[in-house]
Length: 165
Image (cartoon, rainbow, N blue to C red; front, side, top):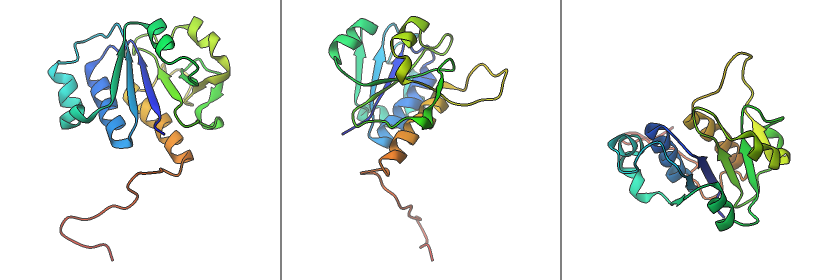
């Protein structure tokens, strides 16, 4: 069972490219809710995603309603600086969706209110507006993976020229 990362109207191609690479590396599906602030064929997104973009399991949706219709009954966690609960205080289910908002505005508050029981935040110092979107996705995603003991992931590193002693 794979986890799902959802980007609500992402605006910066390099962030989406980096998130795509993280999704490939973790066996996670990526869902993009339009409108996007860029074209998916832009070289910035390919540069950020490197040669991994071709291996990405990605689905696009016309809008938020299209996403809800095509993923009816899905458990959706809303990652937002406005959320009342910390991201480590929940148990992420298999096949759950973790949604992140656009870089300039986050997830709209009316959507957050519909999901207040699953809205989560990353703690930060007062006065900081937000973390980089790619960093935020990695932080929350890897907590969900940690809760599964990184099932199906490579757990050991290997040197190229030498052996670990």
